[in-house]
Length: 248
Image 1 (cartoon, rainbow, N blue to C red):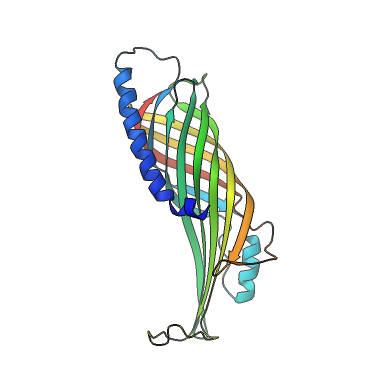
Image 2 (image 1 turned 45 degrees about the vertical axis):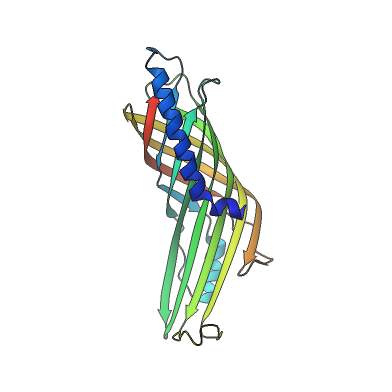
């Protein structure tokens, strides 16, 4: 799964290339059609989103360290998504998506700098069904099936660093990285509003369910006792601009 996540950017690049080729083919075919009894076409684009994970267990630990609590209202993520109607099943479309984002808090006390960084990301296959009784816009119910991760990093620094002593550990400077890899299943509701035949505005929301959580610390060392509710489950909303060919 880790390799899948690391290659997410490459996957999205290849995916959008395929989407572009298929859209051109679909557009050529559409020139001979005057009326359509189901949505068709496809596209892809930039998708900013706002994810709201549960950080309460983490904030309790940060309080012990003396780092301010992370925001409970969520964090901003960026990513991409795309889809294409498969044609032989009316109103059904498949695609892919990926996202990532982070938030942080820091403080300086008595000459010591403290910081915590929380990062979340993931991606996967999307399967959606566009409601046939709604015309002119696309309203689609579906789900994302894939993988994701959370990374939590904490820093404590109060002495300078030199190249000669870079490998020497001290009690004054410390760093910890926690990583949680998991599978995700995310029910979604997305609405695409065509602004033009080749441009559409997307609005959407969903809830990310995670399972198979696997926590590690620093250099892939196992860690026990992590609270069960410290995971990637999160509500999110998103909005973005898609380019492609859209006929709802």
